[in-house]
Length: 422
Ligand SMILES: *Cc1c(COP(=O)(O)O)cnc(C)c1O
Image (cartoon, rainbow, N blue to C red):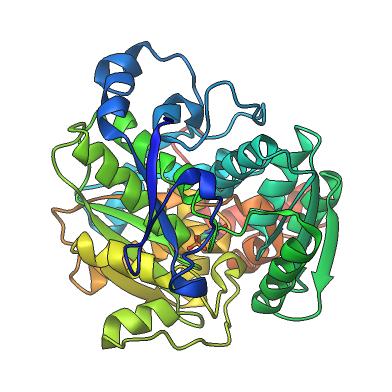
């Protein structure tokens, strides 16, 4: 038997074997997303502090003992994961925290955390002998799928809403994907990709329904544990769209906790954009069912009006005794600017939302001056320079090629410009 013991429906508890090739639960339909359960005793022997010390694989595949991919399985050669983790003193004191860490997942091969999921999706598709793979995406899941698939010569059919930022579209085209830009929302794109997958027999990488993708995403939590020498901060902040990423983070943390690798579990801070906060609303009001919204935010990667994984996201935050917050687009832009200017880290709006959420949580008293926090930067700022420029409007000096103009500007603002060295 392989390392996967079973798959369990997160709604009704129905169990399946890996060989059954079930995506979502057959008992409760679309909503029953499955959870992968491993043989943890077996994993413990292969994955512990000693083996990790000797492990020279500096990518997320160093955790393959707890990933749904066999060691001899063909997989994308791209270096996914093991992204840098920084301690950011300056931003930490601006917010008023005891410490703030930044996990920069914008440093992945296609510049977002989604590479962690897509690499696993592609490896699984190869194992199934798939000839093509598809997904719908607000942008990053698609670009990561296209890049990872390209690296092994697998064809991709991508469905994106027309509001996709140009840089993400450029990535898709460069990676050679067949791209359908849908005149409609992400939800429209999702329905089309689901229908096409079943009609044409393409492997389905939609992480809202494919249980194996979250298994890639959880590795970001594994890395955080290892990079912080097993001493986790009080809180982990991450932005939430469909809810798969935060659910993945929680699964990873719990698995390492259950393996005895960490001694306490942090609280999760789930951050949604105010104009697209249906999961926040369910959490806030205690409603039984989620009410879809029409998303309105410049943070395109979390502009999800009908989140596929809201139950898992909600459960993760509640189990962790965490909180959800929502942030405005202005707060996101301001967080983007501060993260860049104080830490040198360039985040796309949806990624900077985590920092905006930390500000909000501090203001609301969820975090105190004693709190330590790690914020996951889920995607790189170059993916959406339009928003970046908007965040920093008026910051450049547009001048004629004349030294006089420079002198005037410097003199007017000498306090800011003339430093000790000059
Ligand atoms: C996908 C994505 C998210 C949110 O992840 P979900 O699984 O949709 O909740 C956040 N930030 C970025 C940059 C993303 O690409």
